[in-house]
Length: 99
Ligand code: SF4
Image (cartoon, rainbow, N blue to C red; front, side, top):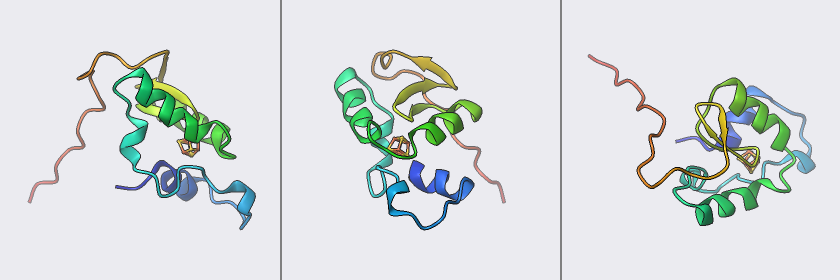
């Protein structure tokens, strides 16, 4: 699974500039699908000083994403203040290729 950083970098290629390195490179992408406020705070801690924060949030909103994007918790592109209870509806599973 690609990290958000990889998804963003592939869609918004930037010049080689170390100051634009995404803060979540190498992080477990599951961090950004928090189940409670403690996990949400942990995810946001990556985003708080990330140079890609605005690009990331814009991408999350445009693509109607789920999870933490640009330091904001999204559910199908809509902002949430806190994760819903454990087991909240997540992004529908990707369709499985047949054949
Ligand atoms: S804003 Fe957060 S989720 Fe987005 S690239 Fe930066 S650290 Fe990753």
